[in-house]
Image (cartoon, rainbow over all chains, first blue to last red; front, side):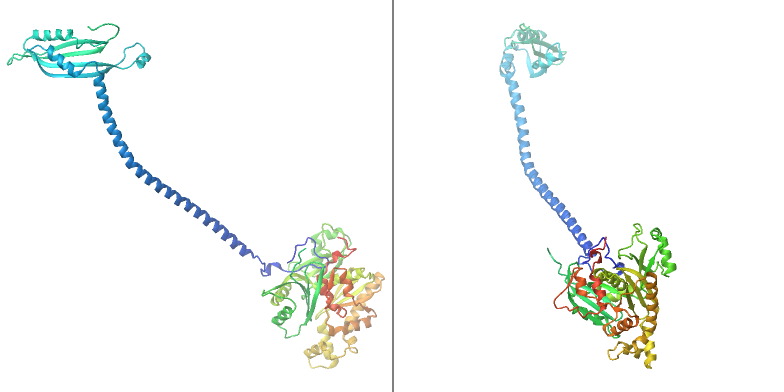
Length: 220
Length: 348
């Protein structure tokens, strides 16, 4: 209603006591304060609702992901089992590959050993095993670059009546063409125990080792 | 441009009556749309006043109507002071001392306004370009009473002015507008006091207060007519049934003597003769007082041409409002509307 004037009207000083006059403002101060408070409350409520909605969305996402994980877990178990089976079969395949990669055929070897064996000699156990040996070389770099090499060992456990039988068998083995494998050296070693007094037989053990040849050369 | 639809309400509250005017707006230019007067008899209640105002303006269901009011609080004061030098008035302590020692006003309990007596602007001690100042104001507690009284009538005082001061401003402006260079003797007769002012060359030149008022006249009237009590005298005084033409000068003898003394002294000091007398506030039925004084003092009564005067202040009257016969008491209401600084020749 009254505009603030910089200049008081001439001859007309105002003696109104403002402090004791009632508040008749159309937009009352307390109303403004309440209005501001309501606005702030609404903003706060809005923020809370937004957060709650975000939390709700996250929970939903987590549940969806958990369900996905559960579904994937079953599939994963299945895959894991398949993987384990694969590993198992792979090992067998690898073993078979090794078996077929070996320079000697087991069944041919057994036939050859049976033909070479003197009549007085009795086999109680024949084993065929392989082992990896480090590549031969001077430098570590050369060693690491070289392909791994295999050692093959055939062990024959048995017994003989006479030592001459053993010697004869050993010689036969060393001269046998079956054990003559390219790029391999053949070493035959025998060990024997004391003769059994009661039975009169001597327990023996023959080790035939096929080791990779160091350089050009034939078998021993 | 857009015009405010809020009507202006200007009210002058004296001990005799309430004068009210509804205007087109508060900001100039304004048009006075309607005027009304409510005599304040002994049995007038606040509700009656509110009902009277409600006929003039629409409260729109509100408790208060924002208005601009002029009042005559008891113990109001209006003192002219002329300093020997401009510099003295720059000292606030000096001003306080003048108030306390010369005019017996306690600044702690009163609301005081200091005006430049030459043009009525707020006195600025720092600028200090005048030697003549006016102290005006009243007791804070009594101003509070009057403000509360207005509130009880449903009036919210957007401005609360001393009608004595505002009316004198109007007289100064009227003199400037009509180029009345001779002194004007202004008299404000109230129950307990008679305030006397002299306006010269559109400036306040003298203020004086006599401790003789209408209450003293009632006693004289009671004695003169052998009435049984003061109340009867008062009742007769305000009635329109008695002709005071003969007895008037007797009743006013003391006041007239004082006025003669004051005016005579001023005339001697300045060498100027008083041109006319102006009586404010008094109701229509006491118009004989002005005539009696005029006759006794041998000076004319100032009969202002309101319409011409106010037109120059951007205040006009609606067609239905007849101002040709309005008494000089209405000067106060119209002065409440005026912005005297806009008058040509009044420097900022």
